[in-house]
Each structure stands twice: as structure tokens, then as C-alpha cells.
Length: 180
Image (cartoon, rainbow, N blue to C red; front, top):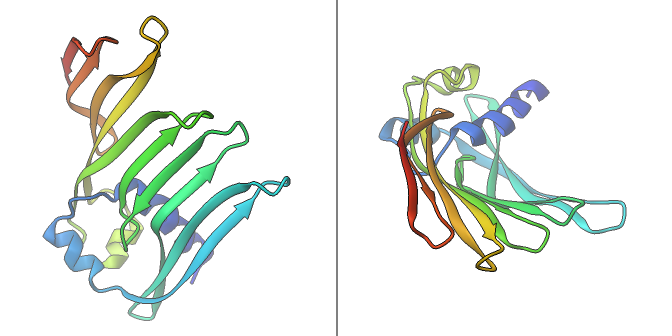
């Protein structure tokens, strides 16, 4: 399998794949036959973990596909980390971002995924056939209240702002509601 194809799948599919899959998406992905998986573990020079996750390999019509699956954690030198959970086909279910103190500062959840691709080749060759919706929460710290609070609830459809964005004050009161 071409390295370019593997990289494209490992990068693009998680970006454009999400939790509530349509029947079209499920039909397409159910054609994949799992053939192998490998655990990925990398470390910084000091021995502390840098990345932990699993890649699962599938075959369809004599072609191999690779997808991130299960829980993946990326650690950063400053102590912050990201955690993503993927389904069996590299579909991002959730992403969480933590600061160096382990405080949740942002999380996102995939709400919808649909594709009009007729086959895996079409799915692989372009991302124009995909429709996806992600809902996110962003948190801020209030020094007045000495606590973290939900600052923003947002939504993106196909990577663009959509839905209603809600901005909150530190006391939880709605500050502003903006329709996209």
C-alpha cells in the first residue's frame, strides 16, 4: 500500500469522521475486513510518554487501509495532553484537551457523519462527499470565582461555524447567543 494512501487515511478520516454515522457511511465501512492492529507508543528523550494509541489495518478488494482506533493520548513537553477516542474505522467520537495541570480546557463530540461516496476509492480520493457536525465546549478560568467555567458552546458543520453559539459568564449566566 502506498505510504501516501496510509497517511491520507490516518490524517483525513479522523478529521472528517464522526459519531452518528449514516447508513451510507456504515454500508461503506462494513466492507472493510480487519487484518491486523498495532499499538503505537512513543516517548520523549527523557522516557516520558509522547504518544499512545492503536492503528487497525483493514483490507478491501486487495487494498490495505489503516485507521486510528480506540483511545489515543498525545502528551506535550509543557505537560498538556489531548485524548481522542476513535471507533473501529477511525471515526473520532470525542476529543478532550487538558492543560499542564490536568484541567479540561476544551472538549468536542461528533454528532453526525454522512457520506455520498459510492465506494471506498471515492471515499479515499476526496472529502467533498462528507458531511459532519461537531459540538464543542470551551472552558475559561475565572480568577474572581477561583474556578473553571463553561465559556463557549459551539458547533461546526464541515469545518465551518454553524448552529447557535452560546457564550457564558463565569457565574453560568448566558452572556450572548449567536446564530451562525
